[in-house]
Length: 403
Image (cartoon, rainbow, N blue to C red; front, top):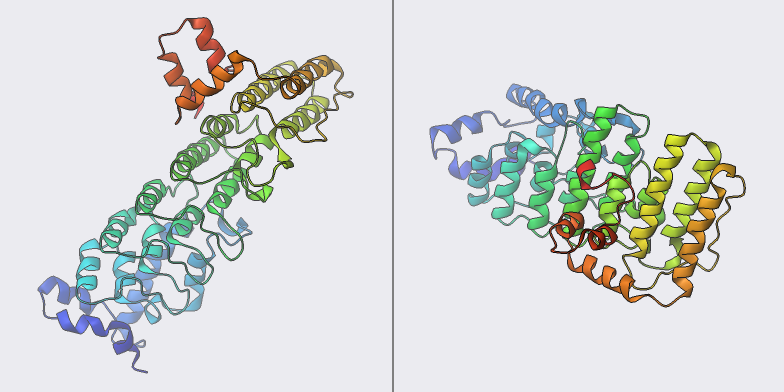
């Protein structure tokens, strides 16, 4: 096969179009062994790999191969041996060249022969390539096409973000506005929330400043995903963002509050409380942490956040749904046993008794004020302060300002 013609034959039609176009052509290899191809490979690798992975804090720790495609490109050989001119124009962030190539006949959805990555996949992976991403979408690129791993452009954008140096928030926003499917799943079962869950895990024990940046990025992206219909409470539990935030409600309380105030289910949204229940998780973690530590400031903060989380869950639905085996075991928590038991009996009472009119009004008003931020909208209501306090559900200082 004539490699040069197979990969770049569409360019011959416009080779004489202008001096700038001709200059661009001169950078492309005519044959794999051409010296210009070697120069192009080095430049391409620096553009393509250096920005995404030399700065990628997670590095090789991504067990699920979240950024595997980009790392592989540095191992297979010269990118010019498998990328088309359109791919290279994207890697060099040249939106005008991208449009020229497409209008001259280049296949906008063409996948490279090694990784099966499309130009849109590459454009989604770096915030600097946003102009190319926008141009490709305007030109009709298939936003929901997937590579050999089942990864769409949206999943590429999520997998390439580390929340610290690489923030693909605007790429993700653009893809969602362009019709990207929030229910897309890779062949390994990764969802849009898999990558957020991974980044939240990177916060534990890490640098405080980096943890704040990751938290902010995850919040912004979760908000975008939920605004376009993503469900953070689906099975399996290890892929559920709500489940993770409930298990670590002290660490991820602002995000948990956002999820519950935005309508996320506190039980498994597919199978109900028999699969997993937010009430059970909160009591389990509360008992576990308080038994391990009786330090006053820690215990006070934990109890405040637990009480707020329980009330947020109760206020999200007219009738509380608890699992049949719902129990709490505070016997070993000597200092706080009475408080935990009081919280437990109040939750059980909500399930046993018909909902009060006051409770139903709170549920209805808070639902009517969605989407987030509900608290800001409640504070603007022409109501007495006591009613606002009841609607706000704020037993701690962790509100939307914490995000």
